[in-house]
Image (tube, rainbow, N blue to C red):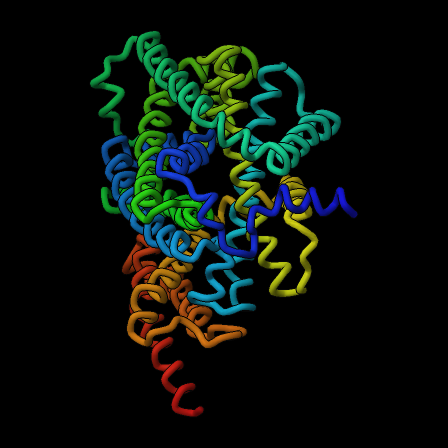
Length: 471
């Protein structure tokens, strides 16, 4: 029993309570985490995807726009977390959703972050297969996924502070390798810097039409819809980290840095490296994989695996090693946030508090299950929906704290079970954004965010006044 108590105390990290002032951190300490969690293979692939669909100019313009929106949402959610000391899903109990209503946000956010863990595991797995020149077999899956899962559990449970301390080193080293790769690839390709920073859409015209990205506005909308999911998730992660902030300014700076790295730096590097190195990647698939040139090009353009392959081809052994370290810090931070969501979910639905270590394990077990069958493919197709929902959640929390609370002097009745204004706003915001107004407002989060800031305060204030009058 004593050992179990020690384990829980080491891993709970105030999961269901406010962080004390003695554990608060400055902007630099927080920024290593906000930047570290987004410097990953999947974000490099997103950069390659949006720039290949829209061209690098429109892709970068969309990245700057999403970075601004994401930074503002992250600062807003992080500021509230700094004030209350609470994690994002626990915070939503008081602001936006009520005690049991917070389960909705915990479920969606937890699912999204767990999906990212699964995606990053899959990319690492393909990278290992490529590096070791091994076939994709059941035994290899069990071995590699088993090792990765065990590593994330142990690092999150017992080495989180160590990971946080060395994340600065791994982040700087990872970025240095990225810059080296970019210079090396451009030089070896024989292309000029001007050409690799001005390329247009690379996808076939019929594919662009199918995506609704055959016009400049369509391309911009596609890029924003793809990137906003990660920005919405990062805003809620900013709240999980913002509860450790010493000031609102600290989490504001950290939120800006995280979004700049995710939506500008990684988009630019991912697009440029994949564009300049495309011929070499295609040739490698032809020589090693025995593919035709057309099949190799389709694989390189459309598969996230190509980013891991590029790292190994252009970065060599050092690039492969740093790729693993970079993914490790991101996977630990993802596991941390996902386990916080599951902790809140189990608490409000089942009053079950076994300690966060249990949820660290469950998070990684769920991530492994997502690799079975077509669940991960379904997650990929669901990413735009998740972006709508996460930005809606962040908007409601901010609206409750900034608009409703000052207007009425309090945010929620004591012991409120479900804040129906928040739940109704999420449902209506999603339906309006994804179905009703999608053809008129193709950038879906516009609709969901406006709904959060307009409809939620109106519903909430109206409902609270009726409750007060009835009493």
